[in-house]
Length: 507
Image 1 (cartoon, rainbow, N blue to C red):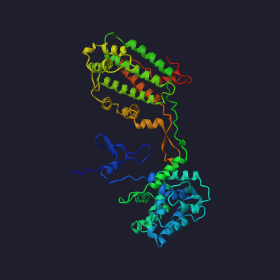
Image 2: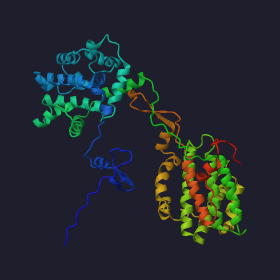
Image 3: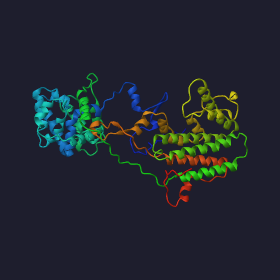
Image 4: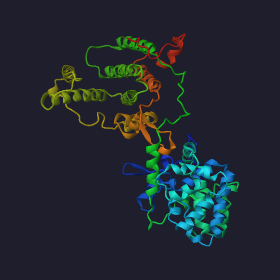
C-alpha cells in the first residue's frame, strides 16, 4: 500500500498584494462570514485596544521627535532616554513614558525627566506643538521647558499623520521606546537575548521577526488596570475643535476606458434594429410568453441603459440601481432560456401579472395609490392574459429560487459575484452606499481620518451596464436568430469621430 503524499497548496496571491484573509479563510456561521480574529473575540480571549484612539496621543512627544528629526538621530535620542532610565536610582518608577504616566510622577522626578528629554538641541522645537493643548498632562512642567517657541501646527499634523497607522515605521518606533522603557526599568521581564535583540531593533537589517513582537508587547495591558482615556479623549476633542477639515488628496483617480465607449446614438440604432427583428420574428397575435419575454427583457434593459446615459446618471446612485436591475434581467433570461419550458415562460409572465393584481387590490381597498402609479395601466396588466379572478398571486420568488441560486443554475455565478453584492448595498440604502456616495474622508490627520458630508463622485456604471446589455442581446440572437448587432462591437465601426456619449439626441 503506497503512502499518499500531502500536496502543499500554495497560498493564492491576491490581486491587491495586500496581506488579508481571503474568503476561504473565513468561517460561515449562521449566515455570517467570520474572520479568524472575530472568532477569538467571541471566545473572550481577545480585547480590542486602539493605538490611534488611545495610545498615540500618549506617545505624542515621541511622534513629534521621530517626525522632526532624521530617524537615526531620533532613535539615538530615544536610546539616550532609555539609558537615563536604566541608570537612574528610581528607575522602577520610570517605566511609563506616556504623557499621562510622566504626569503621575512626583514633581521632582517628573521635572528631572522632562528636562532630560528636552535638553538636546532642537528638541524643544520638535516638542513645541505640545503647547497647543490645554488638557496636556503635566502641562505646566512641559511649558517651563518649551514655552517661548512658536508651535508648528504643520509639524503636529505630520507627526500624527505618520503615526496614525499602528504598523507604520514611525508608529512602531514610538511603540518600541515605550516597551523598552518598561524593560530597562524592570517592569517588564523578558529573556536577556530577546531584550538585547529588541534594544538593537532599529539598526538591524531584517526586522520582520522583531516588529511584530514589539507591537504585541506594546499593546498588552493589565486587565485589572483599565486604561485612563482622559488625555486621549481630550487630545482628539481639542484637535477637532481647533483645526479645520480639508479634502484628502487621492492619487488613484479613475481613468475612463476609451476602448469601451457607448453613445446614445449607437443605443438608438440598436433599439431600432431590435424592433425590426421583433417584427421579423413575431408570428402571432396570440399570447407568446417566450417571444414577449425575450424581446421585452432586451427592450427593458436598453431603456434602463438609455436613462443611465443621461447627464450624470451613470456616475450616480441611480446608475448603480440600474446596473443591478440589468444584472437581474440577464440572469433571469439566461435561466429561462436554459430551461426553455413553456410552463416556465408562462410562470414568469404570470408572476408579473400577479404583482399587478396584488397592487390593484391594495390600492382598491387598503391604501391610496402614490402619484406615480397608473391604476388603469396595472389593472390592464392584471387582466389582459386572464381575468384576474382566475389569476393566482405568488408572494414568493417567481422561480422558487433566489437570484444567487438562479445564477448558479444559469452558469452566471461569476457575474452575480461581480455586480450583485455592492449594487444591492445601494438598492437597500445600507451604510456602505451611504458612506461612499455622501461622505468624504477628511485629510486632516488631527481628525483621525473621520468622515464629513460631501457629495462624492462615483465611478461610471455605463460601460459595465452596456456589457450586460450586449449579453442580453446575445440571448435574443440565440433564441431568435439572426441578430448580429451589438453595442460595443458596432460602436467603433459606425463612428468616424467619437460623439458625445451623453448627448440628448436619442429618440
